[in-house]
Image (cartoon, rainbow, N blue to C red; front, side):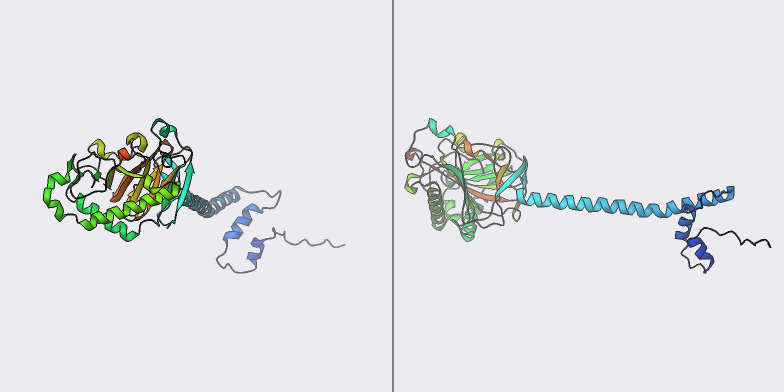
Length: 360
């Protein structure tokens, strides 16, 4: 038999073989990769081949590395965005104060007809004379945006602005007490009725004091209804005052408004405390939220012009005010007692002197 003729050895099938049958169109990178990874088993690789293959591997790694880096950073970016979004959602739901996590009891964007939380009474009321139908047996805290209108708050704020324009603290907290006449001036207090004399008639009007009395009566009625007591059993007590707080550094102890305290301890006559806010959190100022301090999570009230916050004055309502970081925060503290001996009259243009106060 005639010897059979053998054809030329076949190379490995794949894109390398295919390339031999068609012109190069500039897409050789896949073939380089397959040529290296798809060498036939048992094939002897010469030194020149090894050099060529080494160059090919380095080229391939150089091409793939930027893609791997981009994929890695893309995963990191997506994970970071998800983490940030989750944090923002948690912040919006709980908020956070300077002590850590806090639950928002009343947010600035809410308009609350009324919100009340009952808490167990402390023993602070046991050591004082009790007045049945008034001394707290039901304790708690409430917030309402339906007691005072925003227009009334604007007009009340104008009274504070007129009075505080006569003085003001060198530090961040200024006080105006229309009952006692106490006014912050520099590092001290003066009695504005004595200091300015008859000139005070050009600053305030009878309409100002009439509005102040009407607002006090509305707040008094709201407290009585919330705690189930008679409004007539409540008596205005001192100090009741306006506060103006900004970010100026404290100069005296009177400027350090941010310390936690209990009203019943600080002012023994207090049984019920209320605050009427006259400016808006995050619009007029930053920081400055009112914080009820509790184990686990504090509860914050975000000021809103016309918002009334009220609470029993004992240790069950330990609280503080956050430092104001920017802008100016206005509020008025209106306090009530059950003891008629500790009561004070509504302010007039020429009231007697009295003590200073702490802003809240």
